[in-house]
Structures are given as C-alpha cells and as structure tokens.
Image (tube, rainbow, N blue to C red; front, side):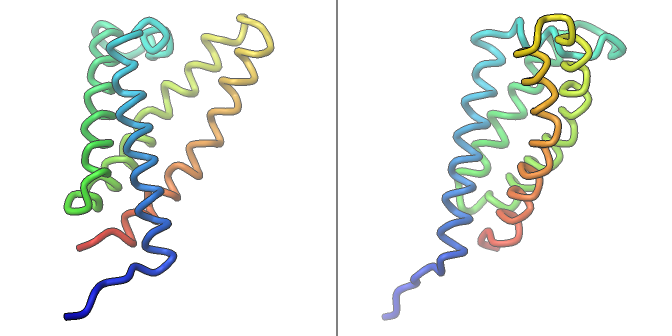
Length: 133
C-alpha cells in the first residue's frame, strides 16, 4: 500500500484554502453579529433594504468558507470565492465614497481594500487549480 504525500504546492494550497475558508466564515458571521458597518457600504442605488444585502452576503461568505474547508467541495468553494470577491467589489468602491469624509484612517483603509481584491481572487484561482477533483 502506498501513501499519498502531497507536494509543497498542494499543502500550501490546502493551507490557503483553510485560511480563506476560516476568514470567510468569520467575516460572514460578522455580517449578523455587527451588521451596521456592512449596511453603510451597501450602494444606495441597489433596490430594497441594505440589511437584506448585508445578510445575503453574510450567508454567501459563510457558505463559501464552508465549501473551501472541505476538500471534496474545495473547487466549488474556490469558484464561489472568486464570484463573491467580484460581487462585493462595488460595495468596496462605495465604501470609499461613504467613508471619504470620516478622516484619513477610514479613507486609507477603504482605498487600500480595493487592490487587495486582486490577490484574493488569484489565491482563490490557485486553490481551484490545485484542489482535488
């Protein structure tokens, strides 16, 4: 009987998927525990109540994180993460607009988040490519 020994890339990708999954579950839970900050960055142009979008994105983050934690669903979770990171980008852009007059720390934080979407997407893509089929 032979044992499977993952290569460095596989274990690295697995660790990335686990960190990403845990982060998404934590952030998704925050959408329910402390929803107000998320409500404030929902673009006003969207129809309906901001809280609906806060809760919906929280559910999406928790579900995506759970998919990433399970090797069998990791590929689907990685695709969901990519879609999620793209979908929340308008809210991140809106946060710059909303937080612009809240002082330099808030302004810098909001602006700094924008380019961070790129490495998050590329990491999710790497997880997708290296996840078990």
